[in-house]
Amino acid sequence: MLLGVAVAVVVAGCGAPRGTDGNLVDGWALPPAPSYVAPRAGQCLNDPGFTAFERPDRASATTVDCAREHTVEVVATGELRDPPVWDSDATRTVYAACDASASAYVGGDWHTGRLLPYLSVPSEQGWRGGVRAWVCGLAEAADDLFLPKQTSEPLHGRLRELALGCVDLDGGDLTADGFYRSVDAVLPVPCAQAHDTEFVGVWAAPAGAFPADAQALNATVSKACFTQVAAFMGVTELQLYQRKDVYTFWDGLTAAQWRLGDRVAHCFLNVSTNTPLRTSLRGLGTKPLPQG
Image 1 (tube, rainbow, N blue to C red):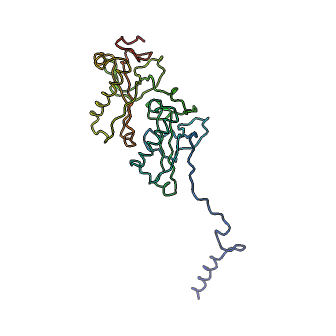
Image 2: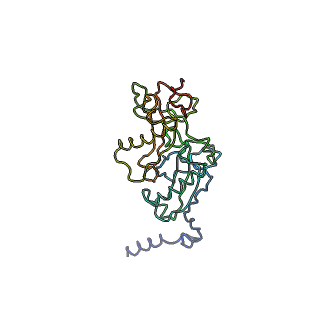
Image 3: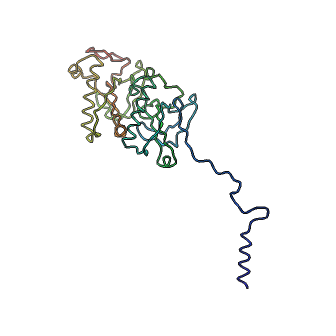
């Protein structure tokens, strides 16, 4: 008898409240299916945390009015056919398309400007949710050429204005002759401002595996850039070798860059911090360094 009463109480407690039909979802609209609308070329994104050639976190990028400060200007979009594995031929193919689109967008090889690339592909979770779009963009480079700068200036067709020219290095210990043993920052400056380094061109390494030997890589790139420095100054390589006041500096060719199929290095000429320049050394020949 007591058991029967208990059951009756429990059953009564599960009944529908007065004035309802007991259907918890009846009449409620279902939430919309998740979707992603890729930005269009010419639109701008703010994603201050990305690094050149590294895979950015798409969730951290927000579309903003280009008149406001932003880091990325979109130059092209497309769709992937295969899942987004970063270190893969599929992503390298997309990067090659991004590279070509970026150069067309600014009016020449973007590597020669104060620019860095942005390539976003869907995350695994996004892919499972149906996202297929890749987004290619460019950012104006900050002081190490690998981090973005906040700007509200457009990039379209502006390679000439954004061209790499003179830069001032900053780094670790200085030698007795005034050269940095290690470099932490490459700050673009007007050539009329005191500087110790000048951009002379780019060099693309041949295809193959990323060099495991850093010393061998440095020797190969330094030799290629040495040739460019000599041509930039209008001297033979022997004449440049005989100078003791102009050396070669290069940056780029990181493992992350190489994984995307980009094997371009920036070549620079470099002088001592004890003898800063205030003009370009293009065509200087065998004449002495101009006095600052």
